[in-house]
Image (cartoon, rainbow, N blue to C red; front, side, top):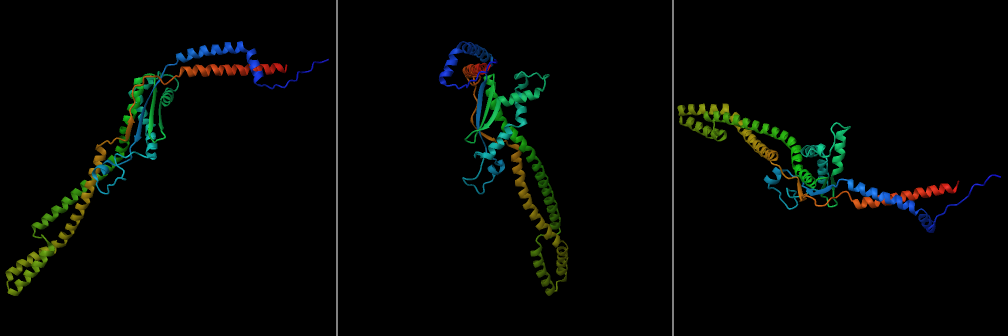
Length: 339
Protein backbone atom coordinates (compact mmCIF):
# COMPACT_ATOMS: atom_id res chain seq x y z
CA UNK A 1 0.00 0.00 0.00
CA UNK A 2 1.54 3.35 -1.08
CA UNK A 3 2.52 5.92 1.53
CA UNK A 4 0.39 8.99 1.89
CA UNK A 5 2.14 12.29 1.46
CA UNK A 6 2.37 14.33 4.59
CA UNK A 7 -0.05 17.18 4.75
CA UNK A 8 1.04 19.97 7.02
CA UNK A 9 -0.10 23.56 7.43
CA UNK A 10 2.88 25.71 8.32
CA UNK A 11 1.76 28.46 10.67
CA UNK A 12 4.49 30.14 12.69
CA UNK A 13 3.95 32.16 15.77
CA UNK A 14 6.49 33.84 18.03
CA UNK A 15 6.90 30.71 20.15
CA UNK A 16 7.53 28.54 17.06
CA UNK A 17 10.12 31.03 15.80
CA UNK A 18 11.93 31.09 19.12
CA UNK A 19 11.90 27.30 19.20
CA UNK A 20 13.31 27.17 15.69
CA UNK A 21 16.01 29.71 16.59
CA UNK A 22 17.05 27.66 19.61
CA UNK A 23 17.13 24.53 17.51
CA UNK A 24 19.39 26.17 14.88
CA UNK A 25 21.36 28.32 17.34
CA UNK A 26 24.76 26.84 16.56
CA UNK A 27 24.43 27.24 12.82
CA UNK A 28 23.21 30.82 13.18
CA UNK A 29 25.88 31.66 15.74
CA UNK A 30 28.75 30.24 13.71
CA UNK A 31 27.70 31.85 10.42
CA UNK A 32 26.95 35.23 12.08
CA UNK A 33 30.30 35.14 13.89
CA UNK A 34 32.13 34.45 10.64
CA UNK A 35 30.23 37.31 9.00
CA UNK A 36 31.09 39.57 11.94
CA UNK A 37 34.81 38.81 11.65
CA UNK A 38 34.82 39.15 7.85
CA UNK A 39 32.97 42.48 8.10
CA UNK A 40 35.59 43.78 10.53
CA UNK A 41 38.44 42.87 8.18
CA UNK A 42 36.60 44.31 5.16
CA UNK A 43 35.79 47.58 6.96
CA UNK A 44 39.40 47.92 8.11
CA UNK A 45 40.63 47.42 4.55
CA UNK A 46 38.50 50.31 3.21
CA UNK A 47 40.54 53.49 2.79
CA UNK A 48 39.04 56.27 4.90
CA UNK A 49 37.77 59.36 3.10
CA UNK A 50 37.47 62.87 4.47
CA UNK A 51 34.72 65.35 3.64
CA UNK A 52 35.07 69.10 3.18
CA UNK A 53 32.37 71.56 2.22
CA UNK A 54 31.88 75.13 1.07
CA UNK A 55 28.61 77.00 1.57
CA UNK A 56 27.80 79.93 -0.71
CA UNK A 57 25.00 82.10 -2.03
CA UNK A 58 24.93 83.16 -5.71
CA UNK A 59 24.99 86.90 -6.36
CA UNK A 60 22.20 88.60 -8.28
CA UNK A 61 22.99 89.19 -11.98
CA UNK A 62 23.95 92.87 -12.13
CA UNK A 63 25.84 94.83 -14.78
CA UNK A 64 28.98 96.25 -13.17
CA UNK A 65 28.82 99.43 -15.22
CA UNK A 66 25.15 100.05 -14.45
CA UNK A 67 25.58 99.37 -10.76
CA UNK A 68 28.70 101.49 -10.27
CA UNK A 69 28.28 104.36 -12.74
CA UNK A 70 24.55 105.05 -13.01
CA UNK A 71 22.91 107.02 -10.22
CA UNK A 72 19.42 107.50 -11.57
CA UNK A 73 16.43 105.84 -9.92
CA UNK A 74 18.36 104.54 -6.92
CA UNK A 75 16.18 102.94 -4.25
CA UNK A 76 16.56 100.38 -1.52
CA UNK A 77 14.63 97.82 -3.60
CA UNK A 78 16.96 98.05 -6.59
CA UNK A 79 19.14 95.07 -7.36
CA UNK A 80 22.82 95.90 -6.91
CA UNK A 81 26.15 94.15 -6.39
CA UNK A 82 25.28 93.35 -2.75
CA UNK A 83 22.01 91.54 -3.53
CA UNK A 84 21.74 87.76 -3.11
CA UNK A 85 20.42 85.81 -6.06
CA UNK A 86 17.04 84.10 -6.10
CA UNK A 87 16.06 80.56 -7.12
CA UNK A 88 16.84 81.09 -10.80
CA UNK A 89 20.38 82.27 -9.98
CA UNK A 90 20.83 79.24 -7.70
CA UNK A 91 19.82 76.88 -10.50
CA UNK A 92 22.07 78.72 -12.94
CA UNK A 93 24.98 78.46 -10.52
CA UNK A 94 24.41 74.70 -10.15
CA UNK A 95 24.58 74.33 -13.92
CA UNK A 96 27.89 76.21 -13.97
CA UNK A 97 29.29 74.06 -11.15
CA UNK A 98 28.39 70.93 -13.10
CA UNK A 99 29.90 72.29 -16.29
CA UNK A 100 32.84 70.76 -18.08
CA UNK A 101 34.96 73.90 -17.59
CA UNK A 102 35.14 73.51 -13.81
CA UNK A 103 35.57 69.75 -14.04
CA UNK A 104 38.44 70.11 -16.53
CA UNK A 105 40.12 72.73 -14.33
CA UNK A 106 39.98 70.55 -11.19
CA UNK A 107 40.99 67.35 -13.03
CA UNK A 108 44.05 69.04 -14.54
CA UNK A 109 45.12 70.97 -11.45
CA UNK A 110 45.01 67.98 -9.10
CA UNK A 111 45.89 65.33 -11.71
CA UNK A 112 42.85 63.32 -10.65
CA UNK A 113 43.58 60.57 -13.16
CA UNK A 114 46.65 59.59 -11.12
CA UNK A 115 45.18 60.66 -7.80
CA UNK A 116 42.24 58.29 -8.27
CA UNK A 117 44.66 55.61 -9.49
CA UNK A 118 42.96 55.17 -12.85
CA UNK A 119 45.03 53.43 -15.51
CA UNK A 120 44.94 55.46 -18.76
CA UNK A 121 45.41 52.23 -20.70
CA UNK A 122 42.43 50.54 -19.04
CA UNK A 123 38.99 50.17 -20.60
CA UNK A 124 37.07 53.47 -20.62
CA UNK A 125 39.43 55.50 -18.39
CA UNK A 126 37.54 58.77 -18.95
CA UNK A 127 34.27 57.14 -17.90
CA UNK A 128 35.96 55.81 -14.77
CA UNK A 129 37.30 59.30 -14.04
CA UNK A 130 33.89 60.87 -14.56
CA UNK A 131 32.24 58.35 -12.22
CA UNK A 132 34.89 58.93 -9.55
CA UNK A 133 34.58 62.70 -9.93
CA UNK A 134 30.79 62.67 -9.61
CA UNK A 135 30.82 60.29 -6.63
CA UNK A 136 33.40 62.36 -4.73
CA UNK A 137 32.47 65.92 -5.73
CA UNK A 138 28.83 66.92 -5.31
CA UNK A 139 26.81 70.13 -5.52
CA UNK A 140 23.38 70.60 -4.01
CA UNK A 141 20.89 73.34 -3.28
CA UNK A 142 20.02 73.65 0.39
CA UNK A 143 16.60 74.44 1.80
CA UNK A 144 17.76 78.03 2.37
CA UNK A 145 18.53 78.57 -1.36
CA UNK A 146 22.28 78.39 -0.80
CA UNK A 147 24.62 75.96 -2.56
CA UNK A 148 26.76 73.37 -0.82
CA UNK A 149 29.95 72.11 -2.46
CA UNK A 150 31.04 68.85 -0.80
CA UNK A 151 34.23 66.95 -1.61
CA UNK A 152 35.27 63.48 -0.44
CA UNK A 153 38.90 62.46 -0.67
CA UNK A 154 41.41 60.16 0.94
CA UNK A 155 43.61 63.19 1.67
CA UNK A 156 41.91 65.67 4.05
CA UNK A 157 43.91 68.65 2.79
CA UNK A 158 43.15 67.89 -0.85
CA UNK A 159 39.44 67.59 -0.09
CA UNK A 160 39.48 71.10 1.43
CA UNK A 161 41.62 72.53 -1.37
CA UNK A 162 39.38 71.16 -4.12
CA UNK A 163 36.24 72.55 -2.47
CA UNK A 164 37.79 76.00 -2.05
CA UNK A 165 39.23 76.01 -5.59
CA UNK A 166 35.87 75.16 -7.12
CA UNK A 167 34.25 78.07 -5.24
CA UNK A 168 37.04 80.42 -6.32
CA UNK A 169 36.93 79.30 -9.96
CA UNK A 170 33.24 80.18 -10.32
CA UNK A 171 34.16 83.84 -10.91
CA UNK A 172 36.63 82.98 -13.67
CA UNK A 173 34.17 80.63 -15.36
CA UNK A 174 31.30 83.12 -15.38
CA UNK A 175 33.61 85.97 -16.43
CA UNK A 176 34.96 83.90 -19.32
CA UNK A 177 31.43 83.11 -20.53
CA UNK A 178 30.28 86.74 -20.21
CA UNK A 179 33.55 88.16 -21.56
CA UNK A 180 33.14 86.53 -24.98
CA UNK A 181 29.69 88.08 -25.45
CA UNK A 182 30.62 91.45 -23.93
CA UNK A 183 33.72 91.67 -26.13
CA UNK A 184 31.68 91.30 -29.32
CA UNK A 185 29.31 94.05 -28.18
CA UNK A 186 32.27 96.21 -27.16
CA UNK A 187 33.84 95.98 -30.63
CA UNK A 188 30.53 96.99 -32.25
CA UNK A 189 30.15 99.99 -29.94
CA UNK A 190 33.80 100.94 -30.39
CA UNK A 191 33.44 100.86 -34.18
CA UNK A 192 30.32 103.06 -34.06
CA UNK A 193 31.93 105.46 -31.56
CA UNK A 194 35.07 105.93 -33.65
CA UNK A 195 32.95 106.33 -36.79
CA UNK A 196 30.89 109.02 -35.03
CA UNK A 197 34.08 110.84 -34.04
CA UNK A 198 35.28 110.84 -37.65
CA UNK A 199 31.92 112.11 -38.92
CA UNK A 200 31.86 114.91 -36.35
CA UNK A 201 35.42 115.92 -37.23
CA UNK A 202 34.64 116.00 -40.98
CA UNK A 203 31.56 118.17 -40.44
CA UNK A 204 33.45 120.45 -38.06
CA UNK A 205 36.25 120.87 -40.63
CA UNK A 206 33.68 121.70 -43.33
CA UNK A 207 32.03 124.29 -41.07
CA UNK A 208 35.43 125.82 -40.31
CA UNK A 209 36.07 126.23 -44.03
CA UNK A 210 32.69 127.93 -44.50
CA UNK A 211 33.33 130.19 -41.51
CA UNK A 212 36.62 131.25 -43.09
CA UNK A 213 34.53 132.50 -46.04
CA UNK A 214 32.63 134.73 -43.64
CA UNK A 215 29.54 132.64 -42.88
CA UNK A 216 29.38 132.75 -39.09
CA UNK A 217 25.69 132.96 -38.20
CA UNK A 218 23.49 132.73 -41.26
CA UNK A 219 20.21 134.05 -39.90
CA UNK A 220 21.59 137.06 -38.03
CA UNK A 221 24.01 137.86 -40.87
CA UNK A 222 21.22 137.79 -43.49
CA UNK A 223 19.12 140.14 -41.38
CA UNK A 224 21.94 142.61 -40.73
CA UNK A 225 23.30 142.54 -44.30
CA UNK A 226 19.82 143.02 -45.77
CA UNK A 227 19.32 146.08 -43.58
CA UNK A 228 22.80 147.42 -44.44
CA UNK A 229 22.22 146.84 -48.17
CA UNK A 230 18.93 148.73 -48.06
CA UNK A 231 20.53 151.66 -46.24
CA UNK A 232 23.40 151.77 -48.77
CA UNK A 233 20.94 151.89 -51.66
CA UNK A 234 18.91 154.65 -50.02
CA UNK A 235 22.07 156.65 -49.37
CA UNK A 236 23.31 155.98 -52.88
CA UNK A 237 26.50 154.34 -51.67
CA UNK A 238 27.05 151.96 -54.59
CA UNK A 239 30.49 150.84 -53.43
CA UNK A 240 29.19 149.71 -50.03
CA UNK A 241 26.15 148.17 -51.68
CA UNK A 242 28.42 146.18 -53.99
CA UNK A 243 30.51 144.84 -51.11
CA UNK A 244 27.41 143.94 -49.17
CA UNK A 245 26.00 142.25 -52.27
CA UNK A 246 29.14 140.07 -52.52
CA UNK A 247 28.77 139.01 -48.88
CA UNK A 248 25.09 138.27 -49.42
CA UNK A 249 26.01 136.16 -52.43
CA UNK A 250 28.40 134.09 -50.31
CA UNK A 251 25.68 133.66 -47.69
CA UNK A 252 23.13 132.57 -50.30
CA UNK A 253 25.63 130.05 -51.71
CA UNK A 254 26.90 128.51 -48.45
CA UNK A 255 24.19 129.43 -45.97
CA UNK A 256 22.03 126.36 -46.58
CA UNK A 257 25.04 124.07 -46.34
CA UNK A 258 26.09 125.84 -43.13
CA UNK A 259 22.69 125.33 -41.52
CA UNK A 260 22.48 121.68 -42.62
CA UNK A 261 25.98 120.88 -41.37
CA UNK A 262 25.35 122.69 -38.07
CA UNK A 263 22.23 120.62 -37.41
CA UNK A 264 23.94 117.38 -38.42
CA UNK A 265 26.93 118.19 -36.22
CA UNK A 266 24.68 118.88 -33.25
CA UNK A 267 22.86 115.57 -33.77
CA UNK A 268 26.14 113.69 -34.27
CA UNK A 269 27.64 115.15 -31.09
CA UNK A 270 24.58 114.02 -29.14
CA UNK A 271 24.84 110.52 -30.66
CA UNK A 272 28.57 110.44 -29.95
CA UNK A 273 27.87 111.27 -26.28
CA UNK A 274 25.49 108.30 -25.97
CA UNK A 275 27.97 106.00 -27.72
CA UNK A 276 30.73 107.22 -25.41
CA UNK A 277 28.65 106.22 -22.35
CA UNK A 278 28.03 102.76 -23.79
CA UNK A 279 31.69 102.46 -24.80
CA UNK A 280 32.83 103.26 -21.25
CA UNK A 281 30.22 100.91 -19.74
CA UNK A 282 31.23 97.92 -21.89
CA UNK A 283 34.92 98.62 -21.21
CA UNK A 284 34.20 98.38 -17.46
CA UNK A 285 32.30 95.11 -17.96
CA UNK A 286 35.22 93.64 -19.92
CA UNK A 287 38.06 94.80 -17.70
CA UNK A 288 36.56 94.14 -14.25
CA UNK A 289 35.66 90.82 -12.60
CA UNK A 290 32.85 91.00 -10.07
CA UNK A 291 32.47 88.13 -7.55
CA UNK A 292 29.57 85.89 -8.57
CA UNK A 293 29.01 84.32 -5.15
CA UNK A 294 28.92 85.21 -1.48
CA UNK A 295 30.93 82.52 0.32
CA UNK A 296 29.47 81.87 3.78
CA UNK A 297 31.76 79.02 4.85
CA UNK A 298 35.15 78.18 3.38
CA UNK A 299 36.34 74.58 3.51
CA UNK A 300 38.86 73.68 6.18
CA UNK A 301 40.97 70.56 6.60
CA UNK A 302 38.73 67.92 8.28
CA UNK A 303 40.08 66.23 11.40
CA UNK A 304 37.86 63.14 11.32
CA UNK A 305 37.01 60.80 8.49
CA UNK A 306 33.53 60.87 7.00
CA UNK A 307 33.63 57.40 5.46
CA UNK A 308 33.55 54.51 6.06
CA UNK A 309 31.41 54.09 9.17
CA UNK A 310 33.04 50.83 10.24
CA UNK A 311 30.71 50.06 13.12
CA UNK A 312 27.66 50.52 10.86
CA UNK A 313 29.20 48.26 8.20
CA UNK A 314 29.89 45.51 10.78
CA UNK A 315 26.41 45.74 12.35
CA UNK A 316 24.53 45.76 9.02
CA UNK A 317 26.66 42.96 7.57
CA UNK A 318 26.21 40.74 10.65
CA UNK A 319 22.47 41.34 10.90
CA UNK A 320 21.98 40.83 7.15
CA UNK A 321 23.90 37.53 7.27
CA UNK A 322 21.90 36.40 10.30
CA UNK A 323 18.58 37.26 8.61
CA UNK A 324 19.57 35.62 5.31
CA UNK A 325 20.77 32.46 7.09
CA UNK A 326 17.56 32.26 9.09
CA UNK A 327 15.48 32.68 5.92
CA UNK A 328 17.40 29.90 4.14
CA UNK A 329 17.00 27.56 7.15
CA UNK A 330 13.26 28.22 7.21
CA UNK A 331 13.00 27.49 3.47
CA UNK A 332 14.95 24.25 3.88
CA UNK A 333 12.76 23.20 6.81
CA UNK A 334 9.63 24.01 4.84
CA UNK A 335 10.81 21.90 1.88
CA UNK A 336 11.65 18.97 4.19
CA UNK A 337 8.17 19.10 5.65
CA UNK A 338 6.65 18.07 2.30
CA UNK A 339 9.03 15.26 1.49
